[in-house]
Length: 161
Image (cartoon, rainbow, N blue to C red; front, side, top):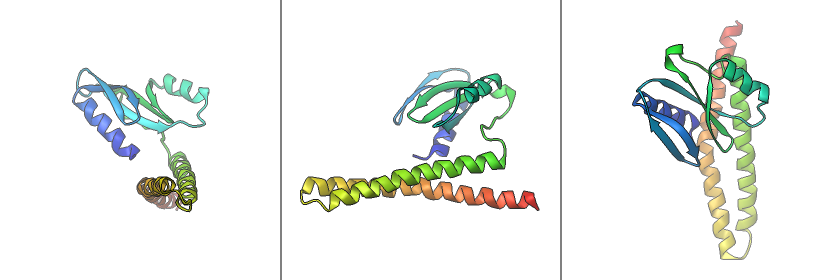
């Protein structure tokens, strides 16, 4: 659920010579290669245009795989580090968008949980409690992303002065 830790883990695997080949709902397939050959990044890609992906290709950034709404990219390490979001404004917009999307899912989970909990059937109550528990788990990345947004806003204020 923590996309930044996931990205770091994939890069740690690449440092050991294991390259991401495919990802599917928490399941990752790697292939062996030379240690440290690639640097990986992941990104939520809802709403990204074909032009965006063509731009990444022109920058020698290779699309590796997609897992739901998340895409995984890599670039040769000898070309230096790379960031998909290179300036404060784009980072801030991206993280606000990710947080807002998670808030929408949390709101839906609270609504669905509440509807199920008030039902008389015990199965509905159980499903409602599971919904609420999942919303609580979603709270961790929401809080972490909100802290990241606040830090980026503070940094942006320093640059504006």
